[in-house]
Amino acid sequence: MIEDKFHDECAVVGVVNVPEAAKYCYLGLYAMQHRGQEGAGIVSTHGTQVFAHRDTGLVADVFSGEALTGLEGSLAIGHTRYATFGRKDKSNLQPLTANFLNSSFSIAHNGNLVNARSIRDRLEKEGSIFSTTSDTETFLHLIAKAKDKQSIVNRVIEAARKVEGAYSLVVKSGQNLIAVRDPAGVRPLSLGKLGSGYMVASETCAFDLVGAELVREIEPGEVLRITDSGELESFRIDESSKSRSALCVFEYVYFSRPDSVIDGKSVYAVRKQLGYELAGEHPVDVDYVIPVPDSGVPAALGFAQSSKIPLEFGLIRNHYVGRTFIEPQQSIRDFGVKIKLNPNAKLLAGKKVVLVDDSLVRGTTSKKIVAMLRQAGVKEVHFRISSPPTISPCHYGIDTPSKEELIASSNSTEEICEFIAADSLAYLSMDGMYRAVEQKRENYCDACFSENYPCGVP
Ligand code: SF4
Image 1: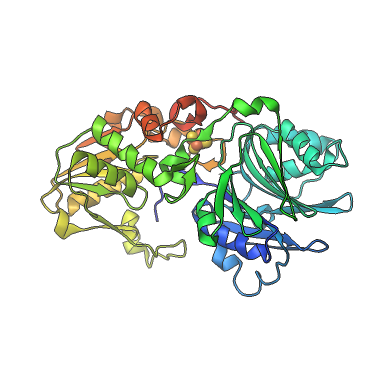
Image 2: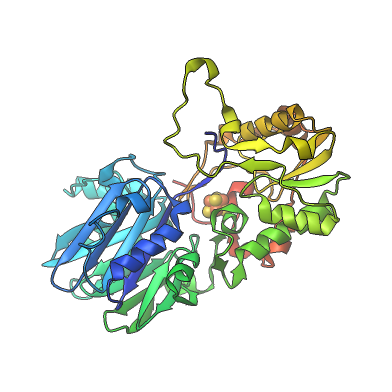
């Protein structure tokens, strides 16, 4: 199967003051499975004992059978992983747990620390021993070595002041749930009310599944402690973080589920608006608007409504293609994109179409889709992308190809159009993207489109 996309890396979830908290964590992770499919884990506690289960695989497979039943208690944190930094093995699965000062401490993390390597080198020189290659463990060591031995919040803040980069953290310490968002707020993290307790999650779609009510976003630079009696206390990593924000704009373009809400905005509504803007900037005279499923659907709908051209499902997706697919024999090996998508030939033959997708990364899949449509008899294939050209990799927790592999980093739009063999190709402008998001550009990270990295690079 070919997946020519940026890949979201991880999701975190935490539940406190709720009976059977691990089961809610599980459902939260299940709702956020799109953010990581390599493995998942949950750590829970009922006060005196700590329970943990982590394994590779999809959330439903990791917590099948008795695994979930054994995770007792009213406090739990969970994580689902798509490895970007560190080895793809079981030792890097989260949450990570350590014991120090007669207390158990667990942590799960979404994002990337740009100075993790240098901190780790220093800690190793000082005698620290690491058991994983994940930068989450760096955070754990910094918390363990923090000067304040009394207040866990102060220890987390001290650690957070030493790291740079993008991170949303959930921490279980004693009977406290601590949620942290980096000072620039690159990765999303929201707070929800769940019965008499609370839930925090990378995306609000996790709240919808369990009936939690969205309270608000955890703010950039905020450290939120929630006790097992449901009391909330808010702290800040650094006072200067109050006015800073660099939320990943790609969350709106592709990563988040369309039914999630970020900064009070429906991701679905923003994606549709991206399509409206795209149609306004790059109109085309065709018979049908065709979404590249599933990521291009809301933008294609916006494009169709704006241009008054009918939207049709010209590409049919097989939803059951997984990583277990085994290609039967060498002679018919190159299925390419057809394993996943099949053109609706009866609909498309002899027609002119515009394909709408959210992004174009290497261009390899787009090229195959164009070829497939031509084989199905399509007369003209125009491509429209509902975001600007991706010219630079992400260093903040997203799995991206190297700069050399990003086709737009070294090719003009005309050259890319020629490579994918489309009749025309156009991208949404940066201004168009921010018109759809309805926010000021300075409040967002758009480094993969601009090379303007708000939190430095490793
Ligand atoms: S570089 Fe791109 S993908 Fe990474 S955080 Fe910034 S906008 Fe998001």
